[in-house]
Every structure is written in C-alpha cells, then in structure tokens.
Length: 410
Image (cartoon, rainbow, N blue to C red; front, side, top):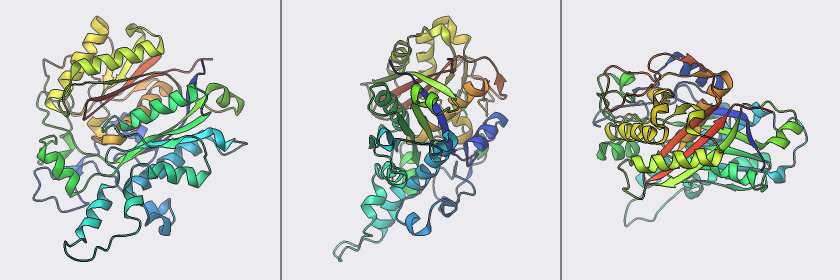
C-alpha cells in the first residue's frame, strides 16, 4: 500500500499568522482570546472571541481579487500558499495533473451573506453583488487555490461542521492511497466571528460567557468550564505519497498512518462517547496499531461541560489503563474553536508535536474535575518521545474523524 506523508504546513491562527509563529505561541501557552473588535458586541451575551490579530489580506492577495472573496477564502489561500512554499513543492518539476486540493469550511461565507442581505428590501428590485454566490460557497476556496497554481487533480470541499477539515485530510489520504493523486493540499478555514456567528452560538448556549476574563475563558477539562470560545483562521497540510516525496528530496514532518470516520447516529448537537470511541478504534485499526503504541492525543477538547466528559469517557473506553499513561492536550484552550478549520489547525499542531517531539500544554486549568482525570498536560509544554499521535475532531450532526500521525521512519 502507498504510504502518505506530510511535507508542508501552513497556519493562520489567533496566536500566530504563520505555522512557526503558531507553534512558538502554543509552546508558550499564549491565549488568543480578547474582546471582539469586528463588530459592536456590547449587547451580546458573549463579547469576546479569538480573532486574528494584525492580519491584512492585501499583504498576500491582489486588492482587486481580494474584493471578490470572503474572508474564509482569504484565509484558505494564505495557509495553502504557506504550506506549498514550506514543502518546496514548486521548486522543481511537478506534474500538476496529479496535485489536488481539498479545502473545508463548516460555514463558509457567512459575512458575505450578512452584508448582501443587509442591502435587500422586500418589494424593491434586488441589487445583489454579482460575486455574492461565488464569494459565499464553501468549495470556492479550493477552486481559487487550484486556479492560482494550475493544480488539476481532485478539487472540492468537505463539510461536516467541526470535523470538516479533518475530513478533508482524510479524503486527501484516501485519494493518494488509491493512486488518484500524488500530492494533495488539504485543510480548512473559517471566518464566523460576526453578529450571526456569535449570536447563533449564543442562542444555543454553546459559548463561554466569561466576559470579565476572556483570556481564561477557554478552559478544557476544568471543573468551571462554561462553553467554547469562537475562533477564526485556517490551516493547510501538503500530503504526498512517500515515493513522490522521496523522489524530490522533500523534508518529511510525519507520516499519516491511518484514519477513522464514523457517525454518532444519536443527536444533532449533544456529544456521544460511543461515537468518539468508535472513530478512535477505527483509526487504530486502519493504522494497524494497538492502543498502547499511542503516545499522545490532540483532543477535540472544546471546553463545553458535556463534551469534555464525553471525550474523556471515550478515551478510557478505547485505551483502558493506558489512557492514564497518555499525554493529552487541547489546542482550543489557546486558539478557541475554529469550527470547520479546527481539524486542520489541530492536525498541524499534532504533526509539529511529532516532528519536534514536544507536546504543547492545555492552559487555563484552575479546578480539577473528577470526571476528567487524565493527563491533559496542564500549564507547561512537555518534551517526550512520540511515535504515534491521534488528532480528534467531532462535529454537530454526529460527524467524527480521527487522524493517526506517526513519526517518520524509513
């Protein structure tokens, strides 16, 4: 069977506008949460989020082209180009018919939809922007990346709520394994910090309302957690067949050794330990490894009262006594929840953890929860040998994805 490896990464996050900056901030335990600046949130129950800081799309994209895109597409283009450059993909001969792109989003052009509907008045002639639909639809990000670089391989988007970009990575893996592509640029982006995004999640009572202390509001596995913190940004990975990567002398960060994909078949929003258990077991089986070979799990870890307990229960069910010997951490404690981009952003963190043999911390832990009693790597980064690591993503609708990354060995 063809082996699949990671040769490039890109990231645009609330704590760093590149993959190296992101990794550095993760190790330092930096919180990306602060009061919302994108709109007046003073009347909302939640008035803070994890916004991108200092990002200007015009530093990366021509002004005329940028106007035709929603922010989620800006983010996708930026992270894809960083990953492509990081992989050195365009530095030598490349058969672009064998290079594909899958860029995910959970919501897509929400801000574009809001702006266009603000100008509509029932009974009056509608005057919509001709780029309204192309700016809004989720698949357009992959289309722009393909057009920019001439990549003619498989090209589409995956949508599975908060598992969307993990599904994109899984699909890229399968396409390479089946010989339908040699290289896949995979990942996701999200730009939902606006009135509809915050208001909608507030209506669900899903967001933290710790307005007096935003920086510590994302508290995965803490007894006093009260919901997730909304984030924005994106990430991308370059996946390649091992043979293709070797032929061009690429640096290899890690191997993508297996995947799991499963459904809860339970409830549209409530977490389900059985679904999380099933997808991790599938991933281990697909990778051909036992639970005791796993050293680290980058968990979904949203900081919701029920979700963190459910994921902890699932880990115990899969790993038994070994669950207490694992290191676990939640990237969302620092960057918040990037929704459809979460899987890719956290996969980048997992890959870099393996490459640097270092596990980033889970921050903002103050009070132990007796139902969450595993080693969540609180407060400080830990250097540790990591051969296999899992990255978990679970989405509304009961969509579950688990990625198994492995330290690269010849």
